[in-house]
Amino acid sequence: MKINNAFLKQKEGQILLLGLIMLGCYFILVLLCALFFPDYLQEVLSITATNVIFGRMAGLSIGVSAQMDTTFLVAFNFFIESIMVLVLYPLFVLSWNKLDFVSYPPLTQYLERSQKNAHKYEPLIKRYGVIGLILFVLTPFAMTGPVVGSFVGFLIGLQHRVTLSVVLCSTLVAIILWIYLIKNFEKVLIAYSDMLMIGFIIAAAGLFLWYLLKKTFR
Image (cartoon, rainbow, N blue to C red; front, side, top):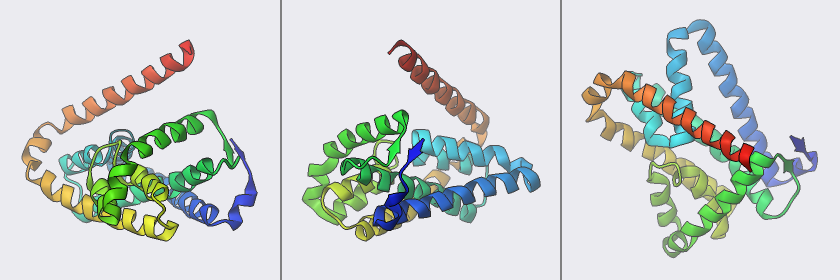
């Protein structure tokens, strides 16, 4: 990965730096968990992977099925989604402005796909402004949510601080609401927790294999 350090004087660079610091804290948290709380390591990694790959609903479902403390589950998922926003949002802005900040093909391809995705939702959210952005972030699926929501916030002309404030506050509210709703199905989730985790792992492995095959044959 090739990085140009000149960006640090820009607002985007400062946002990215904060995201990278939080990412470093995440790895420290995982390390401490592995050393002192090994029983929770699998749940922590599973929640992270499913949240990143499948979206908020999947990560929260695993946390509830594992009977994790609700406060920790809210804080941890908010931490994960904040990292994704604070890292990917400035990269999206820099790529949109055609600045050669990161040269890494998989990331470049992701940002290009994200531009198409964000453009698809831009007219709808622009029509309703901040309210539309809040509703978009409250949606728990992988192709909506805070990351793409922050991209759309930039496209409709919101300032960085407005976009990030709306997206992150809406994310926290969404996590609390969805945990409350999921807990109504807690008994079902606990009964099938092992199957649920195995299912997500198989799905993630399938997606990774598909990516490798696509890249190889391309």
